[in-house]
Amino acid sequence: MARTWLSVSVELIGGRGTYPWPWPGRYFAVGPSHTFAQLADAINDAFARWDKSHLSMFTLADGRDIMDVETGIEFASDPFGPLEVSLDIDTTTVARTVKPGDEFRFVFDLGDDWKHLCRVHEQKIDPMEELGIRPKAPLPYWGWGEIPDQYGRRWADDEGDGPVPRRPKTLHPIATHEWPTRQRRS
View 1: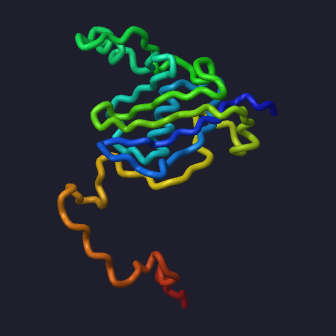
View 2: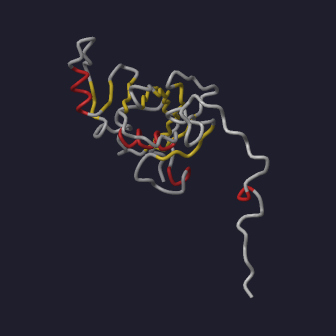
View 3: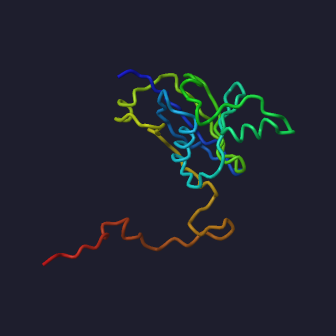
């Protein structure tokens, strides 16, 4: 099969006032018909975002922004500097908008400002060779680094200001060969 899909690396540069180093990242296989909305969903899944009620936007190297239509209209009338060109995140396809060698930015949650550097690899890929499937949406196929929680929580009840719970003295049985406990049938 032909190498017609883009390979896009996405690295987390920072968010919530934190700047991880080295930058955690993922490689994504992006097909010819995949939209920026689908890429945003794939990035958010791959970076362990569970509260997806926040806005996402992309910014291309030429300054054009890609976001939902409603936000684009709102930004176009901003008194602090109207946005001139906005593309629709739901209909703009990645492959028709960027090409190998391009860089662009992805921001998730315009309040917490999770910024990502996106780079289109020089070589296109064949999804069957890289993934063994032709996914219906962009799909990560390589990754590295530690992904921070989108709200900075370190455990389920963390409110951000308490001490870290004490580590148990022994491993949980699921981490050993002691789990599950099996009863022998007679």
